[in-house]
Length: 409
Image (cartoon, rainbow, N blue to C red; front, side, top):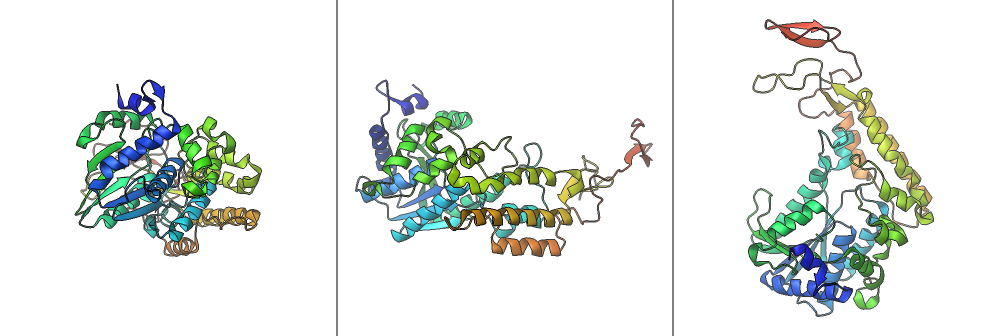
């Protein structure tokens, strides 16, 4: 029987909620005591929030022995759907009240999504040639934060990885479930070295909700976690980001709001269908804005051959490059206007929603004023919608074919 079979069935029957919780307890009891420091990696999504809240409940209830130290790391990309961002802020208030150590993890200022794009001029990410966002604004900062909290010691990193969310992930779990003494059905336990440079300690990772079905995640977030006896956590709002009352049936996956890599905005449209979130309608303008920024008129282009540092000729002559200063300035004002209209429509019901905070806005304006460009660009290049002759080579001499009709010889 595969790990997938074991994670979904016990004795030929689907796991019930109490059985899933019991397996989570067994997982934490089996691997937790070997580590004095537990680090909970929390993205604000349904699976990692369920992981965070049930671990803290089990410790508070005396069902799992607490480690010497617990650290909660929240990955704040500033691009989360508002219900998730608001729930995360409320949960962090609860963590502070209970004296639980937590830290908000963000990328360095110049590498955050909006400053990197609108300040430095790097075009919005795309699936074909320039998918820079996930690693830069989420993975690398979280890896660095884990390494920093680790120091010279060891830690157990607890994640919300769960089977059934990704076929690729499921295959990876099946191939590695027996490593490092892990047993199928007891979570996904792996001993790994952090990827960050200069890390001195060691970490292990454990996914204690690996075997949970999605209905159990929603059962916990909606009906168990909000009750006083299970922690009184403000988790019900999270369902709104996944389809509201139909979250379990919709089984949507969320990403960044206005994600340039997604074909459709299913999660956002589900949210906007709920009257209490109708004020978020301006967020629909983000995806068209990112498409506009990728157009040739808003970008520069190399005007001829490009000599690399080693003297060779680049393989992609006349390639499109960074955003013009004018496009960056216009996009900044449009994003700030979207933000202003959303917060005006919220009428103080929630904390202000920020795609760009004051520090980021100031830094973006500073970078634009300084005429900052990505490496290899100086701003003197023509815009990408400018007609340029095609450079060809005949007998080693550079020539120009205005219409691109000559053959390469």
